[in-house]
Image (cartoon, rainbow, N blue to C red; front, side, top):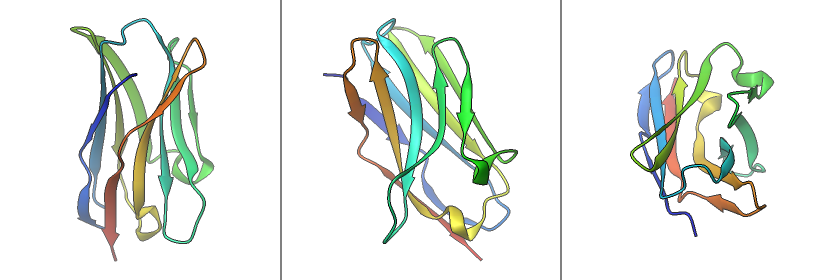
Length: 118
């Protein structure tokens, strides 16, 4: 089991910024990919951004140029960040951290609400 602790959601006006973080303790060296998904009301959960252990990144077309995913490993904790700039109302959703281990296990965070007002 890999416990994930998310933080950073909130309410922001359009054009503003938020930074999400997700910490996975005790997992140094076992995580292949860390990422963020989001789910808006009435819609399917979708990939926002992901980063592999070698720092390769992947972004949804809708967030390219506005969002930046990064990752660091320190003190027996892997942490993934999502810097979200130039936020739009359509970015409003619950954002979920996702972790894929090398052995194949997958874990989800509890979700954090991001609301962008117009």
